[in-house]
Each structure stands twice: as C-alpha cells, then as structure tokens.
Length: 260
Length: 260
Image (cartoon, rainbow over all chains, first blue to last red; front, side, top):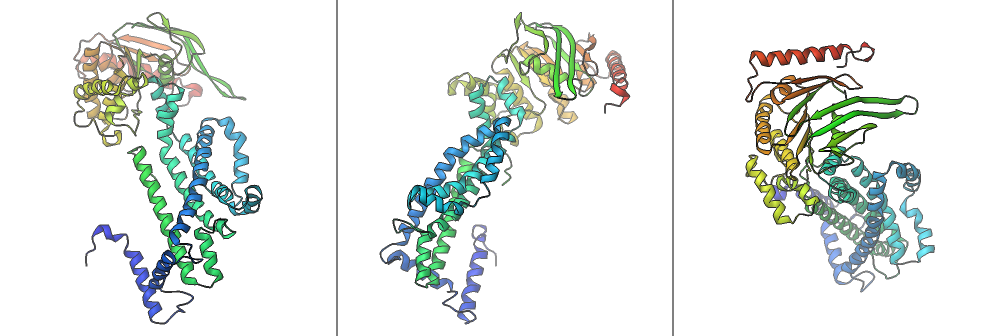
C-alpha cells in the first residue's frame, strides 16, 4: 500500500495511537490511569465546552499561556539580540561578560520562581520573567555564534563596496547571522514554552493557563484531563516551532544549505 | 588612474613575546593608468597584504600609496576588489549582489536594478539574475563578483587570485573574459596569481615579489601582443625567467625550510 508523501509524516503518530487504543481495548492497562486516545479527545472536547475549573474554557487557558510566552519571548529577543550582536563583535565585551553569562545560565528558570513572585507578584510579569530567563540565553549564545562565524571576507567585500559600519551591521552581519539567530529563537521559544507550563504550576492570578489547568485536573484526579492538557502543550509547541521555521526561511531567504 | 607606491612597509604584531612580523619591506612601484599588471610570488609572501593596502582595507606601517596623486587613506570608490573565494552575499540574488555598491550609495532601486541588468547581459548571466550565488558555477560566481567590482565605475581593479579556485578549462575561459573586460573598460588591473602561465598570459608586466618580507624581486615587461600564444617560444622565455626566480626564492626560504 503506497502512502502519499504528504501523509507520511503522520504515519508514526497514527500507528502509536492505534496501538495505544488496541492495548487499552484489550484491557491490558487500567483505562483510568492510562486513558485511551479517544478518551483524551473526549476530554479535550469537555475542556473546550465545559472548562476546568467549570467555566474556564480550554482555548482561554491556551491563549493566556501563549500571551505569557509571547511577553517573555519578546523581552528576551529585545534584550538578547542586541547583546548577542554586540558580544559577537567585541572580543573585549565577550571576555568581560562570558563568565557572568555562563554562571547565570545553568540556573534553572524554575529556581527563580520564588524571587520572581517576590519581585513581581503572581501574574503576567513574573511568568514573563521566568519565560524570559528560558528564552534569553539560547538567543544570546546563538546570536554570538552567528556573528562569530560570519566569513570575514564578506565584511571586507562589503567594505570595498563602500559600506560603512552601520551598513555592514545591517546588510552583512545581521543577514549572515540570521540562520543562527533563528536557531537561537527556536531553542529559546521551546525552552520558554516548557518553562511556562511549569511556572504556572506555582499558581496564576487570572485562573487561566495550561499548566494551571493540568494542576487542577490532578487535584480532581482526572488523568484524561491531564493528558489532554499535555497533548495540547505538545501540539502548540510544535506549531510555534513551525511558525519560527517559516519565519527563518521567509525573512531572509538564505539559500545556503542550512545546518539545523 | 596612475598608481604610485613608494617605500611601502607593512608589519603585523604577532604576539607579546615574538614581536612583529615584517610582511612587506620597501616596495616602490609605479603603475600606469590602464595597464594590466600580474603580481606573482612565493606562497605567503604578502601579495594579498599588498593588495589589501592598495584597496584601503589595511593601513601601511610606513610609506605611501597614491592614486592619481591622491593619498589612499581608506576604501576608495575608484578601486574594485575581486576575491578568490568570490565573497558574494549568499542571501542576495545575482542582481542584488551586482548592485550592492550602488545600494551603498543610495541609488534608487529601479536605477540600480537597471544598471545591474546591463552587466547581467554583458557578462553572460542572463536567465540567472534571480538566482542565488550557491546556484551558480564557480566561473559564473566570479563573473558576478567582477561585475560587482566594476558597477560603481572602478578605475582600478584589484584581483586576489581570482581564478585560483576554478578548474583549468573555466580558468582559461575566464582569462579570455577578463582580457575582454579590460579592453572594454580600459581600467587598470592588478592581478595576483600563483600561476606563472596566467601571469604571463594576462599581464603587460609581471612583478615578482620575494620571500617574506616581500620586496620587488623582478619586474618583467611582457612584450608580446595579445592574443598571446602560450605555446610560443617567446612565451617560454618569460615562463623560464619567472620559474627560475620562484625556484631561487623557494630555496632561500627562511631557515632553509621548503616553503611548501
């Protein structure tokens, strides 16, 4: 049986879900602890229509989470991109800043939660701060790498073409470093998205958020709701990454073989 | 554009302990407007450094370079530069690469496109104007690079082993092409090469640089009319003279080490 190529990418997922359903139907696992896929779909519909806690609908949970990530990610990009470009250009600045960056970087964003709550209270700001920490370092480090790996001959070429320092920055360094910057954004957004859900475990003010919803489902002992929330987190994370990949290819069509 | 180089020295700081490396030592040259000069010398002797100094990409340690009586103190729009590795911007199309120097002078987009398209036609790149460098053959990429160096009406074309990365057939085709460009534009060409045949085939004059620190070791006028026959006896006389010079230089390598 030949599968049209465009459907090939879903083969593995379909097979896994099918086996899961069969194992469940055969009574080999406890359907309460490991609900079959159709139960998860059903749970998702219930979350969408009735909400959890009652009235707090799934799409609002998702939107609130996305808003927090967008805020943190935007801040990380606004701070990380210029810093990365500057660090990439100045060896002196790199020597000065690298130890600081490398000491702060291994601290898990979640370890900042107590301080974040003290500083910003529970709400968008502290969640955004945690996301910021998750996104910031991959963006900075990949931007630095991007700038450092720009072929020096391209800078010379631009210079003999009459480019001044500002133009070399905008017309050469930025586009040349762009694939690497995008890789940083993808990794950063991925980490940020993971971090967010965990950050919401500690509480949210508005009563919305996918992580918060999952904790509520745990409290009322509904693994199907937990899994529905997890599945949505996975799918949304996947879509976010696809969005950034599209951006990577769209904004500057670097036709070099991309190493991603 | 007459080029005057007088007592040019260039040294680089190597390290605190090892001091400086003298690359160029007392080079004086006078190059007539519209002439074609080949520069040849042992590997690593400082040929590229000489060209970078003339282009204004680096500053001499002492000595002066004058273009029509004007001291070169930075990149001049009167000089164009062609790199061995083409140094095209991979994220720009052929047209945008060629038009890059005009973009640096804020020439309106339509006008610089039109000017670049003229070169596309003349340089045999028709049909590839929207292609990206990576989609072109080496010879075509180098033609784009030459077009880019000429579009801003450069009067001196500095070429740093421009055909070194090409296979021998493409290379000889590009040599013909370059002679044609030279005939049409009447610009002064300084071409660095490792290849004795290329130096004699193209240049009206072959300047031989010595082992580092480079001096002018020999300055050979090639009094053979174009088009030249590489198999002729007189061609061989020049080849032999340069070959002997290079052999002597190689055996005189510092410390008696073979420089290859």
